[in-house]
Image 1: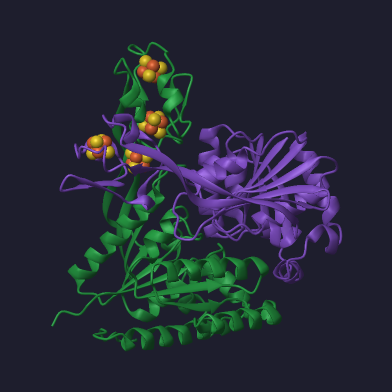
Image 2 (image 1 turned 90 degrees about the horizontal axis):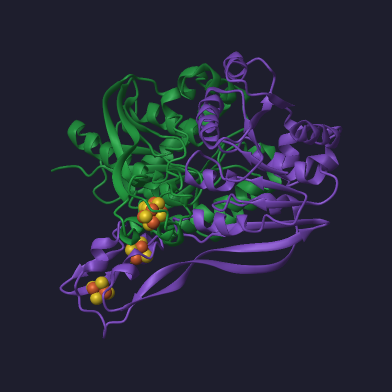
Length: 301
Length: 275
Ligand code: SF4
Ligand code: SF4
Ligand code: SF4
Ligand code: SF4
């Protein structure tokens, strides 16, 4: 019988809560999963899980318009109709253009034309902790949601080829298009937060997002000892909403140094307080995945 | 002067800088929180909210009596928001970008555009400082129109501080557009540096003058220093690593009132930026 591939997305409403550190650590415990870095705006995972790309794929993000000055009569129709204010004095600002094609539709001279553009590149890397799929977006490009979705699809394909039971997704901060692409249809959204006013506020938004798409979610509170009162408040709020707390990670300077060393936590700071706490989280994630009907058996090293 | 505060990587202290800078500037200053997927500035400033209004984009509605089922609209839609199934058009609202191409091509005028809510904008006063923030509704993917609407409030003030969304893609471009300066908040780690480089590229392409603020800094992460030196990016401020700052932040306190010397440092930062 074919095992289903399980997908776990690590998310955080707010950036900088330790999401990538957690993802890289889970990859170490999982024993060579497929890891998808869907934080395409700030793809940092490969700084911890290093490996040279085995293959590269150009990402065609979409269409962009250009105006042929030889044909343009400066009538201004395109500028009036462009809802994205991407045309100013008969020039298309490619950063603002969404490729909707309206300028092409309204131009009486056939001077505005759409063409495909490469807006990023996707990499597949083999690392000592599994295959990592990540991407680099051309700076300032739209379509980061589409790129995140593409990264996830490639990771799923790798999982099938390698018969890997688990795809781990490092999600982006926020609740917009790339976050939606990361959370839809996963088996578990693991939300990393911190006990700060902003962390608590953004956590609420991501729990709402997961529920909106019927994705089960659980919470990790990083640096829980920074503000014990707020940590308790967050725990109560999660209990009220029926969201499981999968772990409390201590404020640990070794965790910060781990990032500078360029190694995942289990290698750079084994048996440190933070590392032991993340390991405990992994045991709970595993128990959760095994509890899903038809769950795969994942061996812990 | 319009000052954007941005950061490629999230959680570097962008909001802390934006909020405290706005509080330290003497005179007529407004704050716009453009981080619409997670607006937090108001948690620190605790403004009295005076108005909340919806932000919408136009989405088509089809008058079935006038529709011929010709499919011209779905062919024109580049976002796959219109599906033709057996001569009937189905609208997938979440995919619609509000470009209005469908209405332009419809031969019978069967498509009417009407606003669909995707988020909201709140305006209020934090003491003497007008603050406005946008919030994207949960499940909505387009943050740019909310940011654009918020940016329309930039007028009539001597100074505007803009708290940008994290990252380096289109929402950041929209937030920074039209600003005189951009402060890039970063941290001395490989993550911080990686994301700073991308952000610097975006700002370079946009032609916005930039400076760096290094948070949680002990001044010893040489690759970051080297990058700033070689790309001519001035380091305008360094904030030391201090657990007390983290604790004040966690409680939602502003540093200019609680951390010794911080107000003077923010005033100094503003004077540098203005110079
Ligand atoms: S394709 Fe659309 S967004 Fe781009 S310039 Fe033309 S009208 Fe504007
Ligand atoms: S509509 Fe065509 S002719 Fe008119 S300004 Fe635009 S590109 Fe030029
Ligand atoms: S307004 Fe544009 S995006 Fe929306 S349905 Fe019409 S053509 Fe598609
Ligand atoms: S273009 Fe107009 S008439 Fe044709 S299918 Fe669309 S709505 Fe109907």
